[in-house]
Image (cartoon, rainbow, N blue to C red; front, side, top):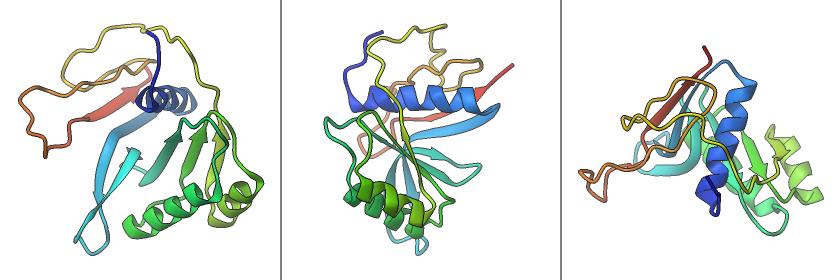
Length: 156
């Protein structure tokens, strides 16, 4: 499988997180309500069990302080736990200092041009094993529904 987009980088970050942790539940492109329940914040990867936000940035240049500031605002709005930003191009010194002040972990993870799929998707959005494959939208969903379902990754 060849990766060419930011969505593919999110998948790669999720696979990396599965290798770090034994049991991880993810939501891709989650819509999490703010503390007033008046609006939702869009989150690249949401870990509902730990209330952790994972931002995935597939930029040509290093991630700047504005990305960190946006994440700080999102964390406050949804009462998230200390969160993480992944970037394949690194971070500016200002972004790293701001992230450290806010308790955000900055991780540089190289972008893999090719990735081996170990088993095919089951079609229902749930996977068990050491690899996660992207779950695609069901054609039955309307445009207003969240089309990236939950993915649960559990090591045997």
